[in-house]
Image 1 (cartoon, rainbow, N blue to C red):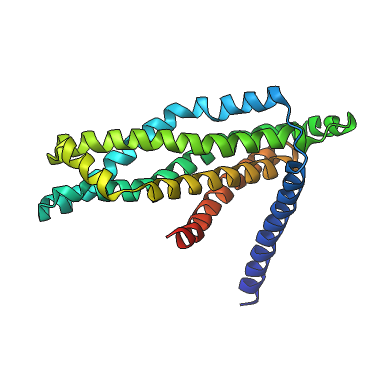
Image 2: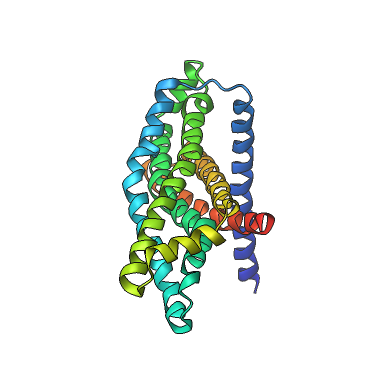
Length: 256
């Protein structure tokens, strides 16, 4: 019993240390945002790396997410002969939940992990210390361009993902369930409103900010050489995924 209490206590203090460190790091980023001094070349490089290079995997993920959603709804549609609700069920679930969540998790696994590894390598090889020696703030030069790129591109990728999800949903409904594209689109446009789209867009923007802060925080906090970089990447992906679901829970409650 004593050993169990010790393990629970150690886990609690480890989580508190991580949360406290990320909170302090977020405060540093917020303070830097009040006096933005972005490096133009670094910002555009990150916008391209984060957004353009993530487009293919986001498009494929969204396409199949839309198709899978229609397949899940399709069994009940065929049973109840309620073909006119396919577009509504698809649009509501994809725009509000499935789209932002899946794209956020893919974004975290691809961009967040890469970001942590890059900054972690710079930290253990003392490149970050060299920037400080040259009176260059790593928050301004390294963190702010990455956080801004993730925030902006996550929102844009979600919009593009919604388009591909609709395409996948229409094709699947037509080819496998027999729902005419006109019926699908009529149901979708009638019952799915702008509020549903903005709900998912707001979530994805917050997810992008969260992934940027977590990945940069773990990257700059690396200790222990190359093994430390590996541990930081693993911890960053896990923390981002958990954070996405926690934030999604509270935003769903507030925006319902």
